Structure formats: structure tokens, C-alpha cells
Amino acid sequence: MLTLRRFLCVVFGFSVLLACFGCPQKSGVPSIDQTPAYQRVGDSEAESLAAHLSTRLQGLRSWTALRPALEDSLGYILRRPQNAVCVNRPGLVLTWAQLGDSVAELIGLLPQLDRNPRLVAERFNGSRWHRERC
Image (tube, rainbow, N blue to C red):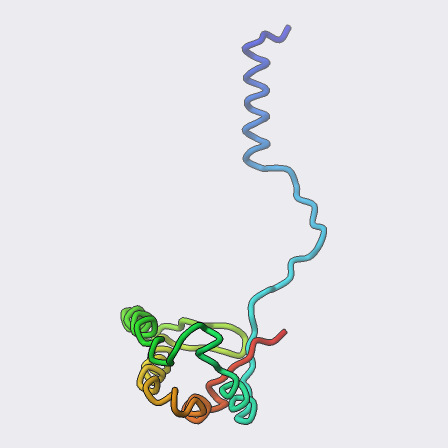
């Protein structure tokens, strides 16, 4: 005859086994890799993208309004190991040093961009513009 104490021990043991090994999961829909993939854009597309950049759409009066945020970002970037990879996606691999160089260059361009926003396309040519692949 099974005592209450023995019954509880059996239930507890079964619960521990079930918790350790779990129930098999049914695999319905296969998982989809949602890692963004990037492709470089050509110079003409980079010029078109740059031509459509607008500070007004961002609620800014001037490109120089981006300076504080970009300088904060650059400070963070410069504290990272410069040879380490910060972006590793299909079609785009960047080190912290490369990212820092681009941000520093953009900060240097800010005072000139209000007069000549096309400088973005000139200085950041097509080899540095990427579009997410859909």
C-alpha cells in the first residue's frame, strides 16, 4: 500500500524528471534568419539618397544640431577596441575604427552641410553607402 509520503515523493521525482528533460517541442514553422543583410549602393544612388536628406524632416534647423549626439556617439566608439568588429552582417563588416573615422568625418562636415548637403554624397561615396536587402 502506497503511503501519502511515498506518493508525494513519486510525484515530486516525476516532476523533477519532467522539469529536467521537458516535453518535446513540436517544430511547426521553421525559423527564419532575420539577420539584416546589406548591399553597397552605387555613386548615383548615393547622390540621390544624399539629395533627399533633410534636417527639417528631423525637426532640426541646421546640420550642426547633430554635433552633440554625434560627439557622444564618437566618444563611445573611441572607447571600444578599435580593431574589433562592431558590425558583422552579410554584405557589411565594420570595425570600431572604421565607424569612428566615418563619424569623425561627418562631424567635420557639419558646418558646411547647410550650404552644400551634396558634400555627404561626395565625401561618403558609394563604397560607404549600404542599403538593407529585403
